[in-house]
Amino acid sequence: MLTNHQERLTFTVPLTLENHSLAQAFRRQQSDSTLRKQVYLNTLAVCAVRYYLCCMGIETNCENCSSWNSVAQSFMDVADLEIPQLGKLECRPILPNSDIVRIPAETWYDRIGYIGVQFDEALREGTLLGFVKNVASCELPIRQLLSLEDLLIHLDELQQTALSRMQVNLSQWFENVFAPGWQSLEALLTANVSQLAFSVRNETNITNTVRGAKLIDLGLQLGQISLALLIAITQEAKESRCITIQLHPMTSNKFLPNSLKLVLMSTKSEIIQEVHSRSMDNYIQLKRFRGKPGEQFTICITNNEFTLTENFVI
Amino acid sequence: MDNTRSKELDLELLKLALLAQQQPVKTIKRQLVLTRLVNEIKLSGRLCHPQRNQFSARLYEEIYNEALQELWLYICQNIHKYEPERASVIVWVNVLLERRFFREAIPKVLGKASVERMNLSELENTPYLEEPPALTEVLREYIENDPENLFKKEHIEKYPSATFQALAQRRFKGKSWKEIAAEFEVKIPTASSFYYRCIDKFQSKIREHCVNC
Image 1 (cartoon, helix red, strand yellow):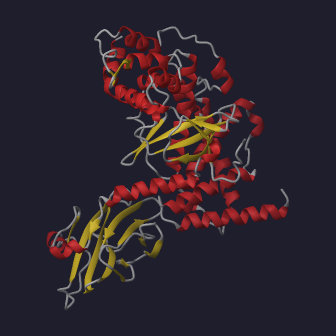
Image 2 (cartoon, rainbow over the protein chains, first blue to last red; image 1 turned 45 degrees about the vertical axis):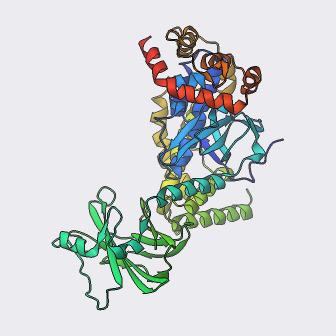
Image 3 (cartoon, rainbow over the protein chains, first blue to last red; image 1 turned 90 degrees about the vertical axis):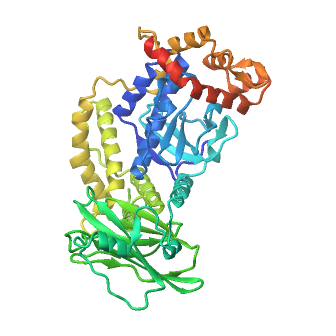
């Protein structure tokens, strides 16, 4: 039975001469005809997935993978692709008109998921049909594959887990404990007194408020521009905190770069609020919001070329 | 394509492009919308085929594929550059394909004329011609001879006959994990995880041998 590709979300990757040339180089290392074919197709499958993830802005690395290593290829039917910090995806080639994905037992370990890549006869295209997280048999019917949407969700969840290990705990600021990269606003002001392009209003009644800052250097991305992300957290009641977030230019820049976005998101990547810089903005600020200790949120600083993400727990 | 369907498609693509523009880079919603957008453009059948008669069919496909790979990547990375007031999505995409990526692909493909692209039936039927001993032989011989008694010593716990050497030789012969597991009376994961760990353990040793050969 053939699955209906039109109904599920797939992605078709055009396979270039460069991809084939790589597959050919790995193939030539082997003499067994089955192995030669296997290595060729495995390489193309990895190329297709690598390309798709690149389109999605997801970094990959082949250097430490068995799929990029002729010795390992001689022993195992592997097509692994590493996503740094998250783990390895297995990219399984599927022949045209086949309705199963073969998942050899040597690939059942150290994988964060399995993607099926179906080829055409001419090997001009590889279509990413879908994915599964875990396997327990050597063959899987294509119709049991989850969609690419599930793959993206899975990778996002893994990313969130990896990031949550680097979460900034705001309540600790009241005890003067700052995560690496962060410091109290007072410390920042003392250290950079001549460089600061902004001043902070001297508010009364700030004993229940603590302010922290992080310097963000966007040297390469934004033409040598440094920014400061400022957060003030105020303890209003036992279970309520009020949070203010601002983005300021640093050093000699009086204004923020144009069309910079400061975005507040839930941990599920839903946008809660956002603010854009216009020309001649000294700073931008999100609307003050409230939260309870233990609640999490994410701040993104983004323009069209990059996104910088920081995760927080109140 | 009739006019109504074409208009519907334009509207759908516009919706997706605008949606993608609203989401921050690298967020899951943007990734999802971009996947859909590329998919819809591809399936629309409205991508142009510039300079069709100027190359042989084989060469043309090669150039077109190269151009498409660059095109999809550009769209995904630069969707913010699409200006809805200037053109429909498909017009924007076709201009990029025709005036930029197809042109850029021509010298790239002509420069790789020596690369031999294989299709499935060629992969299955091409006889083995290359002269120097391929890695496969060197490696199989090394496992077989096992000069340091490494590979026949390492075995699955409590199964002295299920050595790494025995397993590797059977995998080389194309035996399935099911057959191997049955032969040694172990479970598939027991055999394959042992094998996986052995390769990890011996890999640098084996590679060293192959390089010195």
